[in-house]
Image (cartoon, rainbow, N blue to C red):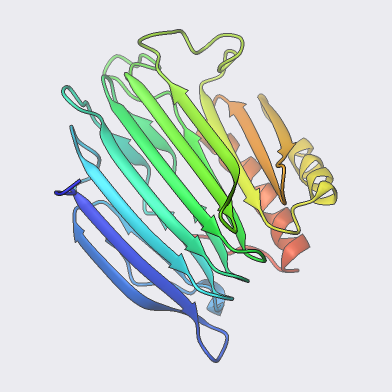
Length: 275
């Protein structure tokens, strides 16, 4: 695409003191990133993605390129929920390609996606990992928004994730919800629930032992939800949660994140301080 609505490029590396620093950053149009914040005086920066326009409009296109250098650790999140407004002529589109070098660690934890009535959105993430790197990625899909409160009034939501480990495709995750063509609240889709959460955990330490600990953490959560964990073919886990509230899925994912941090880093994750 020749004319992108927003472009973001960011490279991070580990310096001689063990701190992850920004090596290169470039943004243009309706896509920006705040200066990194080091929560709790850690060596791991948190970058907040911003959309100055407040949301995605008809035909908007966004591109992101991110590199996590060898041994670097990065948290990437959004400042608020991603809002996709009505797209009468062409869907809004966002693509991201990420390289995670050996020993690198990325947490990509965006806020929920809210699609307004008659909105269509297509998102594609490609993660290219080297052996010894790790990735934590979440997304939460809501029932959207309409003036009369009707749920699932958007046209289409399509989210595609591809994860490569040393150039071998190990994850192909494709979610496509199109309420205009088929009911999605029934059996085999949302099963009466309104919110869908996904959590991809990729790394050599993502094994059966971690899976059992994550199940134990999820079982401690109260509320009406269904959750399942699947082992990936190579070094990874996939968690799916369906519920009726964003906050419940966020609470479950936070409990999982605490479990992962305890097992992998023997510490606690930083609170991202969003208000």
